[in-house]
Amino acid sequence: MSEIRPGDTRDRILDAAERLFMENGYDGASMRQITGEAGVNLAAVNYHFGSKEALISEVFRRRLDWLNEERMRALDAHEAAAEGQPVKPSAIVDAFFGTMLRMAEDETLGGVTFLRLLGRTLGEPSQFIRTLMAHEYQTVMERYKAALFRALPEVPKAEIVWRFHFMLGATSYAIAGTDALRLVTDWQIENEGEMDRLENMMPRLMSFLLGGLRAPLPQFPGGPPDA
Image (cartoon, rainbow, N blue to C red; front, side, top):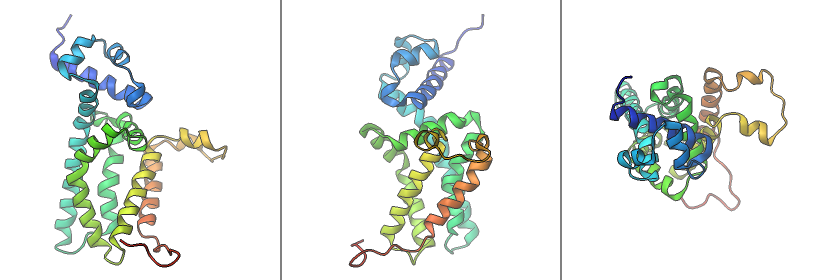
């Protein structure tokens, strides 16, 4: 029997935690479930991570480091190609949201499992998760916010922030899978079996997000609120 290296044990724990956090949420996934799934004892988890909070932090960090670097690389490339002009909104949306959706195609980056974990986490975060995600995303969000402000000078900055908030929510709901749609409505959808396929969902979602970003400004009773 080949010897199990420490790195293998660590990766097994992370893979098991990723699946169980995706299926049950952070609070619903117990350390006993995670150790059983990974085939290790609690001492191994404590040795490698120290706590449940540290474990989920590393689950996200090993995926988000790549995602954030790739988002920055994509935006850098678009800005270089624009030669000082604002980047097109469609390119910004693809660089941020499209990059994330394309992670599902690569199991080495977490694939669909991590994408659905991310969608679930953004939709129902605890205070600890909020703090973690804010830290992980801070630099990237500032860069993308600045790019959107330049790309849409006619849209008030506060409105851009609200629209990006709605875009994050729509994306989180979409990547969580179609179970929620089936749960809350009895709508019949043609070719329902095709809904979960990334190549079909992605163009629909990207079109929807871009449409929301470019939508006419809302009309408020008594005039626009203070920005």
